[in-house]
Figure 1 (cartoon, rainbow, N blue to C red):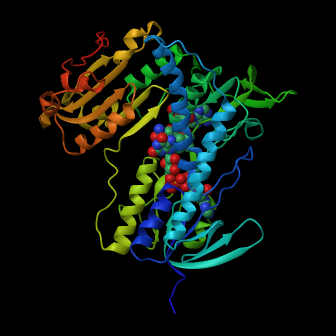
Figure 2 (cartoon, protein in one colour):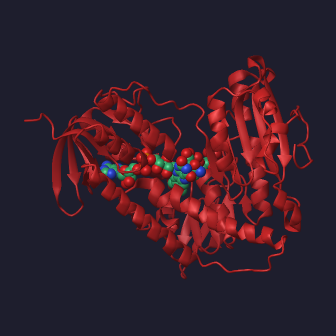
Length: 482
Ligand code: FAD
Ligand code: NDP
């Protein structure tokens, strides 16, 4: 008789949990996964696959692309196209959601084909090796496992504003709402807020972003401010240094927003995008002896992804202090299971993880922001090369004459100008930065960029001809192209 029901039990069938479960099963382990979605306060729920597939990266990117088609139409006008078409929000949502449902189905069949047992149940700890599974319909099972992986991710934070849960939605809802958002207030000013505000506005709706302090905290601030300027020029309103104080429903179903208890405005939709809270607090971790942070809902792990209880691990959005990104969760999950069941030793490396903000102008970056490079290396030890650039097609469109792309390379002067930060604002930045993130991991220097022959005419070729150094108090370079 085996001592435990499973070699590995995974709590959470999202990006990290599914990747880990499949990797472990491929290596011969007996694996089970529990995934359960509690409805959002507005009642939205979804299938297997976690945040990325259902209420994150995938629907967001598809709606971002939908919004880019509008910009492309404007650019196309400069090149002889006369067409002007209309957009249907409900049709977009229907098609996106049908695609998501196919991914949910694919995730289930993937598990089945690898003999991973799937429980559509909410998991909590009964003791350090035993999990209780509540399917929400009165059935409670118990299973035991040698190793347990916490991969339960997080959910949107709402804040404690009176009326917020009754009146507002979050990123858990917006991608599934058939009704067009109409006049929208987005509260928050980071990834989720700016991305949602960007595509909602580009699809033709009146959008205001309520910003508590700065845009995109933690990102390079030159570029964050350029994103703000771009979004403003493309119709997004910003209410700066402001937070709501309460929300009320009007008789006709709209939301009345108050600031300092005075009426600020009435909106069809208020989207809260003020961060996310990990789900660790719901796992009855006390029964397993694993501490968690009550405020962030996250757990601490060591470099082996181990909690303070050696056979209980955690990866992805539920761990404290690491980037909340799908490829990070996937990589950590796969590496962990290769160590547990495949004899491997490689650990997750959280440095130089590239990311992109899609607003709809894209901002891709890897390595340090200028602010972080100054903190880490010292102001006098870094050099910043930069240039403004315009994609070729923008030149033919009079509406684009004030739009500007931008690139920045931050180098360590004392390490032969080793590049420590790469930033790009412009079309397809996500695609471009993915390649450059390999270069930074390989230790690329400014000289490598200079020696590289560019591809003409592309937007990213400007990296190979960048000469201008950013100096204290200097204005941004004005010429288009480096
Ligand atoms: P999740 O994917 O959240 O999966 C956790 C799963 O566990 C969920 O299904 C949850 O319901 C389930 N669960 C929780 N508790 C329990 C329990 N007790 N029992 C059973 N099941 C449970 N990242 C990118 O890299 N690129 C992007 O473009 C991007 N865009 C995003 C856009 C939005 C709007 C959001 C919200 C996030 C975005 N992210 C993006 C972040 C990305 O989605 C997350 O980093 C990623 O999904 C984290 O994976 P995870 O496995 O840690 O958790
Ligand atoms: P973040 O935690 O990054 O940002 C929270 C934002 O809300 C900040 O602007 C913050 O302002 C503001 N805020 C916090 N509390 C309040 C409050 N009480 N009232 C008003 N404003 C407040 O969260 P996000 O939700 O944007 O993103 C979560 C994570 O999801 C990201 O870290 C990212 O890793 C992931 N993600 C990735 C994407 C991608 O890869 N493209 C896209 C979307 C999400 P302040 O600066 O003042 O603190």
